[in-house]
Structure formats: structure tokens, C-alpha cells
Image 1 (cartoon, rainbow, N blue to C red):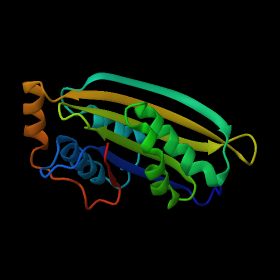
Image 2: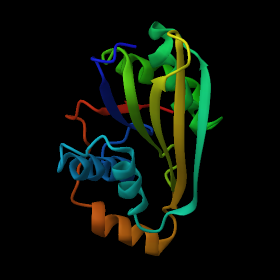
Image 3: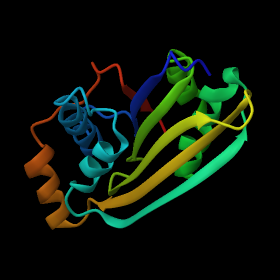
Image 4: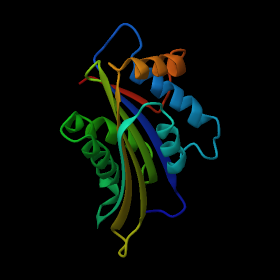
Length: 189
């Protein structure tokens, strides 16, 4: 890893079927992109992403874990390794098809030292599953070794609950899909 070429990246992914009207996941994603873009100095800080996600009202089943993953990862495999960690956070839900598009997005950053990925899965119209993965890459003990620290946060929104639906519409209803953002990816289930 070149210590002088340090980059950080962030990506928002919505997994949902094509619909003519904006989905709640798209509106939430658009609002978070706008919120995180307000402060360019902190918009890729992992704690800022975690705070933004935790401010979404009526999140349930919130779990946050942090773990350190060590291994030998060749520089050319780093984007794939980071993408795989993000896709694996989704598990069997939709993760198998996510690693490739996330990896393609990451390849333009070469050797990222940090990557935040928020995945909003609205495959089921009655709920949204959120998966936030914040990754940090540091030099390992050997020149070809990388240590990856992962902080994972997962949560769900029950859209069939009237109180949740009302809060989502009230807060995120004025936002449209973030289709013009370079850090946004839409994936079909």
C-alpha cells in the first residue's frame, strides 16, 4: 500500500424491485447522502455514518459489532476483499450478488484505506433492512499483509407499522431517489 496515496470511499446501495414511484429506502438514502455531504471534512468518517443511520426513527433489532480481520490480501484483491465483507454483512438475504458491483465501484479508488457502505434492502415492500459496514485498512506486519477492522451495524424498519410509516413519510417524504449521486448504486433483488 502506498502511504502517500490514501483514499477513503463511501457507497450507498438500495436493493429493491423497479417501481414507478420512489421507495422509502431511496428517500432515506437520498436524505443520508445530503446530510453526510454537509460537512466535507467529516463525510467519510465512520462515526458520522453510524450516527446518521442511528437517527432514523423507529429502527428495531439494532446491533452493532466491531471485529478485526487479519489476512494477507494482495493490492489487486483489496477492493474485492472489502466488497465481500460488505456483501457478507447482508448474509443470505441478497449478499451473493452484491460483491461484484461494490468491487467495481471500489476499483476506481485503487487501494482505499477506509470504506463505508450502507445497504438498504427493501426487497419486501413492508420492511427495510439496513446494513452499515465501516471498514478501515491498515498495514500488516509484512509488506503484502493488510489488517482490516470492520464495524457492522444492522437494523430493520417495519413499514407496515403505522407509526413507523408516518415518521418515515414525515421526515423523508420530500426526498426523491438519489439517482444523480456518484456514490449511489441501485441493485435489483
